[in-house]
Length: 166
Ligand SMILES: [Fe+2]
Ligand SMILES: [Fe+2]
Image 1 (tube, rainbow, N blue to C red):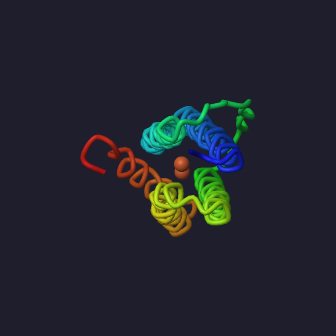
Image 2 (image 1 turned 45 degrees about the horizontal axis):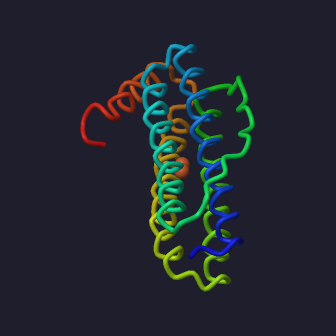
């Protein structure tokens, strides 16, 4: 059985993942509206991944015999500035989520919940990837600066996400 404290911590994390999903959907729409359809596409795929993270959490709680409570999710912003601003915000957000995941893992240790520790390892590794992906785009957009032709090339490249394997 899952402890009340662990259940509470995992349940509130479902909200975190749903917020991430909504944030990336909002960013995706914003990019598309600014003619950056490729970045919009990349963020739409990211939106789907965040929903999967929320589902993964819900499925785990159910498998452990816990009752799932979905709380209110805050509205994401509407304006995100330049493409560099967008992806700097993605990186900042993912770093924050990593901290939340690390706190969840610390809770699972305090609760001596081995199953939750193993389950959360997937999220720990996933966050390493999430931060690296966002960092890569930030680095490239910084290199590009205000050269719009290079920015549009990056937009085209990142728009391939989900159309092939990655
Ligand atoms: Fe996530
Ligand atoms: Fe994420």
